[in-house]
Image 1 (cartoon, rainbow, N blue to C red):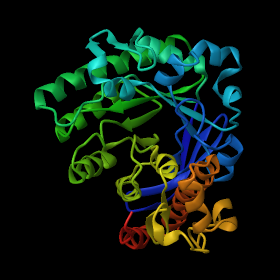
Image 2 (image 1 turned 120 degrees about the vertical axis):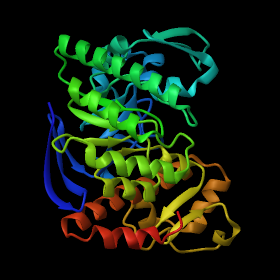
Image 3 (image 1 turned 45 degrees about the vertical axis):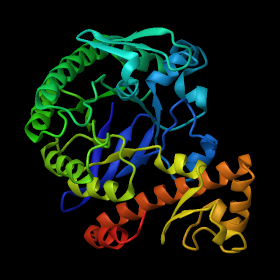
Image 4 (image 1 turned 180 degrees about the horizontal axis):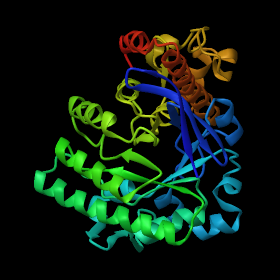
Amino acid sequence: MISIDITARDGRSRTGILRTPRGDVRIPAFMPVGTRGTVKALTPEEVAGAGADIVLGNTYHLYLRPGHMTVHDLGGIHRFMNWKGPVLTDSGGFQVFSLAGLRKITPEGVEFRSHIDGSTHFLSPENATRIQHVLGADIIMAFDECTPYPATREYAANSLRLTTDWARRCRDIHKAEEAESSLFGIVQGGMYQDLRLQSLEELISIGFDGYAVGGLSVGEPKEHMREIMDYLGPAMPEEKPRYLMGIGDLKDIMAGVEAGFDMFDCVMPTRNARNGTLFTSTGRISIKRNEYKNDPSPLDADCDCYTCRNYSKGYLRHLFLCREILSMRLNTMHNLRFYLRFMQRMREAIGQGAFAEFRARWDKIDW
């Protein structure tokens, strides 16, 4: 259902096109997170206008509300949210992992209590896959157990075995239902490099349309996260898309691209925008600070977003302190455009053989 065309390389970093039946995705790609079928504060047209080729939705949240059958009956995820491009859905494994005391993991799946109303539910690899089929996503993720940090080697090894078994079951039901979506497997194994490689090799033997690395950015030190990224990137199949899940810090994204990864997602730009933290070419700023009260300048003179072309820092500070809805919208427009333009510039740098210089320049900035 998907294919990847690499048009340029610079070291291990690569750029090109991920081709899907619903449209092309330029890689390296950042996927805005539309957990409940919306990228918070923006219309789908604004998300596309910011430069997004693909968005992410979440199985767990859409299953609980409004329900996957409701989404299906209203035309599927694309029609439901009026998004014309590809949609990737996470399996819900990370959200279930986040519930901690509200879940019970068994070899068959996970029983959990809804964070909304306390009702009891059960997600197995089979129904997590079926739910994503019903939603109609273009790329779906295998159901996995996200290994926590810290985790003993024994725990990580047992979690890996469970994730591999669940991945095989997801693949089997995916093939049996002859679904039109593409299925990605998720590498686990905690902070143990040999377990990570074992997980990847087992997934490759099962066979997936793409491969993702999960279980990072879950509280581990940055150096451990980057060690895993650097170790796994070169080992992942060359002809398949490589997805580094939940990574949103721009310096971590650059490290991931240098390791050879193609796809990234995180709530970081949108969540920070709603909380008044904004990313600029000179660093991160908090718009609530008093120094911006009478500042007539735009957030970023180098940014071409709607917010920077029309509004001052002083006005944006005023909106934020007054808790105006427009504050969330304008801030989100800026942060998302900044991220997506950053990815565009990085693709251009790879194409020019100048990724090292690009990274050296942006690594100096305090984000």
